[in-house]
Length: 290
Ligand SMILES: NC(=O)c1ccc[n+]([C@@H]2O[C@H](COP(=O)([O-])OP(=O)(O)OC[C@H]3O[C@@H](n4cnc5c(N)ncnc54)[C@H](OP(=O)(O)O)[C@@H]3O)[C@@H](O)[C@H]2O)c1
Image (cartoon, rainbow, N blue to C red; front, side, top):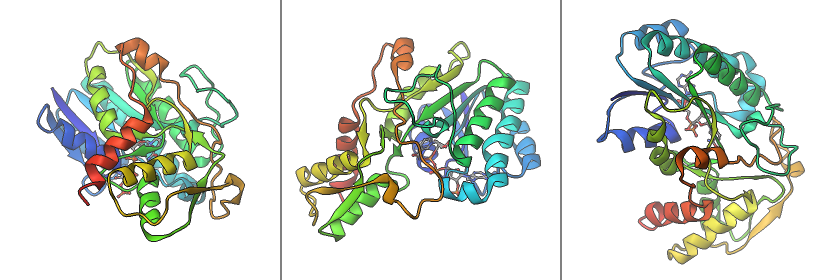
């Protein structure tokens, strides 16, 4: 099976490329090798590449920057997705496109299902939702995978910032009134091949590790795991901050964006492991050695 991955310079793309390299015939393109804002180049490069499955994890993911550069956000996250989908359709290839919990407004207080109406409150969320619609309109067997709070070894994210702050400071705070679920890139890489086959279901699929937490609980667990692993940290307890005190944020973020993984479990018969297990695994594997 020939697989193309767009966005291999990023957190998820780099993890997918590494995990699939020995199992599949994989070609990866990073930002420099294929710029999604150049639609002509996207057409040319993908038309001349042979593949059965295309995984698109590239995107304009800087949530605050999207607010001030909406045209660029829509070009990369929505228009380019349509071009990619059209080429996959021409080639009769399967398209797996990644999206985000930020397509929801965060007003719910129980996990969002694939049937819940998306109603983004940021340009990033709007552009990602437009990309989803383009992908699903092009070919109804295409798959849109929504994930939340992605972390992993290939690019630092919130968890790494928290560990670094806890190494350097005696007092560290994190937002205590915003809730979702961390999703480990290696767990995404493990689950995704279940959807590679041409007869696999299309549509929208939510995937995250199991459970839910605030950023404060997430950071606290990471710090606890570091202490258990014998890593020297100055901070033991993560303090609480309120969302409304995040003055430097430009974009609005959903307060609650937990994704229900019931559909994933129904389709595969498998439940994702808990976010605590995933974080513990990450800290043990990638921090204990540092
Ligand atoms: N990170 C999260 O918490 C999170 C949460 C929910 C959903 N997601 C979704 O999951 C997917 C993967 O996210 P991630 O965490 O791996 O993000 P990431 O680390 O920011 O990776 C995105 C990649 O896209 C590349 N890119 C940006 N503009 C591009 C362009 N014009 N042409 C080609 N490539 C371009 C980036 O390159 P540069 O670095 O050079 O710009 C980067 O390598 C995305 O679809 C994202 O929306 C992420």
